[in-house]
Image (tube, rainbow, N blue to C red; front, side, top):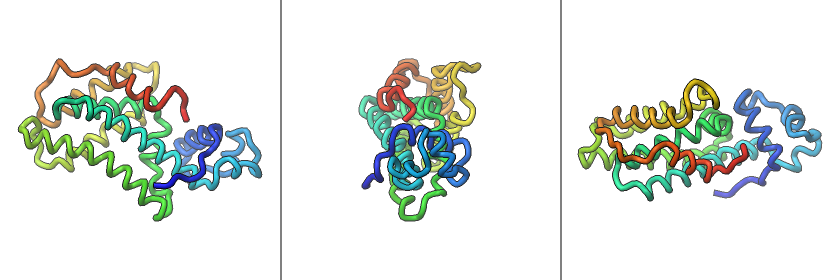
Length: 216
């Protein structure tokens, strides 16, 4: 999949914040330029079109999720370990990169059909990893689910919802949020608890390693 022009970091950071707060169509070019500290006339030099900018945000975020998921699956010896890792990684990413992941989860409809298709393909590739783990667990008798596809949709919806309510420094620490979601997810799949699974700190380090320290 070819990338649009790489946006300036200031422009991308401003776009992530504005698209998450106001939506793609609710964000004007002048507003985006002001937030990035640029004039409207020079903004396009740094970003291509506004749709190019949205595609870059979505593709970058999905590439990161796929990279993190790949690391989880490589190090996981069982479906239970793999699901624990996928859930915690997804939750941590949605907690630490709330605006970026909200844009990916809510603004797909804003893309034109030709730009939407490759983004949907990336999303499907990521979700297929989850479904494959559920199917392996079902085949081995570890997971008890009637339909892996429905289970995958339910789990992803629950875990992605963290971006809507998690606040750093709030009532619940990130490690608690990630581990609780993993516990709930495995219980929903009918898996027995496994005290030997890696703790949340492992996945927090994994996510920050893939995403880096900045918001762009």
